[in-house]
Length: 110
Image (cartoon, rainbow, N blue to C red; front, side, top):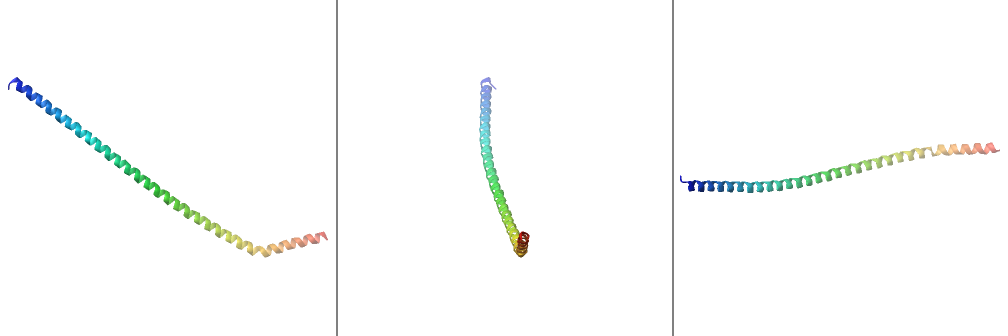
């Protein structure tokens, strides 16, 4: 093979190698860009899912707090009613006691 042909073939091979490298770099850039895009989409979806889960937990906590509040109010009302009944049952006893104290005070003064 004559020398000029060898040089031409070497130049062609180098050009072909350069083209392959350029195509590979372009593919690499496209792959990286696509991977970044997918990562962004995954991150956005994860943030959305986390926000939804957070809102769900918050709503559950609010419902639990409201149920506990209602339970405490009901317990308080029941305790109040019980105390009122106990007090109503002791009215006559208290009236008798106060009357006795009053009579003792009146007798002590006379």
